[in-house]
Image (cartoon, rainbow, N blue to C red; front, side, top):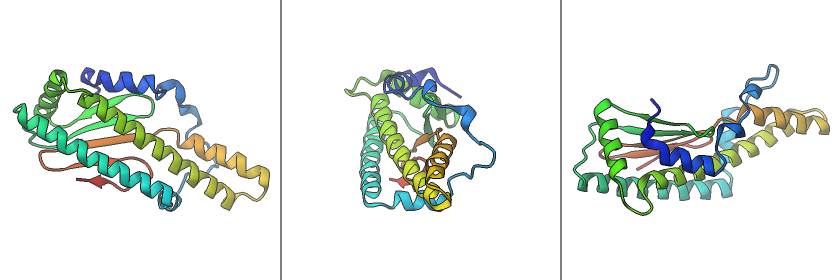
Length: 192
């Protein structure tokens, strides 16, 4: 269910260039082009730069989740289960969870007057995770293209095909009463 509560997330992501015009859904799944294997994504995510960025995201996710839970508790909002904010690279935001938890989180976000508010902070986190995910996917694609291509001209062609298949990125920030996680392509789940 896409919720109008997430308009600040959608607006922010659209302003940052994460809108549907930035994607090419027709390019996904071209016949004859292999997809990026998980092992290649894992190798790319394991580089020093990517690992440092992932640790930074994990730390930020833990802090955001802790502050969000504290603010929700202070506002009298109790979550029975998990609420997920799924932000996709096309700018769409999906708000998942039980009906009661979605309603409680929606009411909290509507009434949130903190600066920056939690919707903006979640959007910033999603943007950072999308950037890291894109970098990991690019590194994995160039590595795979170099490995699989038989000619130097074929490397760029295969790289382009691989990147067109991986244009859709989805970042999911999940929060419950006592845990949270941030997942994105090329990552292991960062849990708090």
